[in-house]
Amino acid sequence: MTEQVESEQNKRLRSKFNFEKYGFYSVTHYIDAQIGFGCKKKLNPQDKKNVSGIGFYIPNKTYNDTGSTRKAFYIRATYGEELLEGIRMRSEQNFHEPIDLEFRDEFFYDTGTEKLYKGNKEITGDEVLLEVYRKHIKTTRQIRGLYLRTKLRFWRIWFPWPLKFLSNVSHYLLFFISGDKYTYEFLFQEENLNGQIISSRMAERVVRKETKKESEKESKQIDFFGNKVPQWPIVFYSLLHLSFWFLLKYFSIKTDQIENFFNTNFLLVLYVIVSFWFVETVLPFLLKKFVKYLSTWSFQVANKTIKV
Image 1 (cartoon, rainbow, N blue to C red):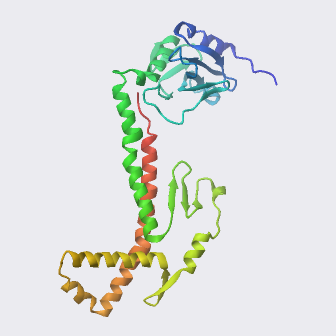
Image 2: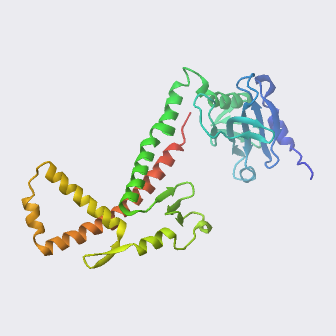
Image 3: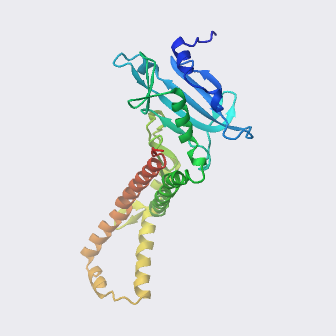
């Protein structure tokens, strides 16, 4: 396999950055982009494990677009364990460590004049490099980084927590009412019911077959007012009404009007049909919607783009 030769234009662009002067090392060009290179820097010289990696590149599709000579840089700054093949992504975020950043529309390179810009202002390569790194390590500054760390904690931890909590409450309440275990994974837009994927962005993951859970539910049905109904919901329905009745008696609440209402067989049947329909059908449907909506919202909040 032959190594891809770096373009002369990319070499000239790299020469505009004084990497060694500011402690950056391991400067390498990208083999899959005509304009692209990366570098590394240690936040702490004594730390032999973790480093920052900053990459600059222009996608080939953008570079080859003849609409304009001014191309937006895609810049990414990451921090993690240094490996031979790159930097390992962190599994947990420490808000006192450098923050992973992406820049997509702030810095530009004119392929005709070979000048660098921030917006419409011409800048040097060193100014680009230092501004990206300064924002990357802002969270490590005790005073200057306090507001950003608080902002990150709010959006990454504090705000998503009650959403996840309510989603879990809906999940367990659904199980308590109907016996169904329902989860939703936003990343794959995937619904899972009783261990079976029923809907997914990746269609090949959906398997249409009757699960043991579903067959058990079909077999465990009882006669209720002349209708065959699942055992689990009717048990919950009965416990719910018994609980209400004992509470009314315990707190000595008068029930004369309620008893008069239920003394009429026609009204009693109507009440049972409507209320059981709500418990067995409507309530589980709403709880599944809550689980899906809250799971989606918590994921979107936790992954919200934050301006540094």
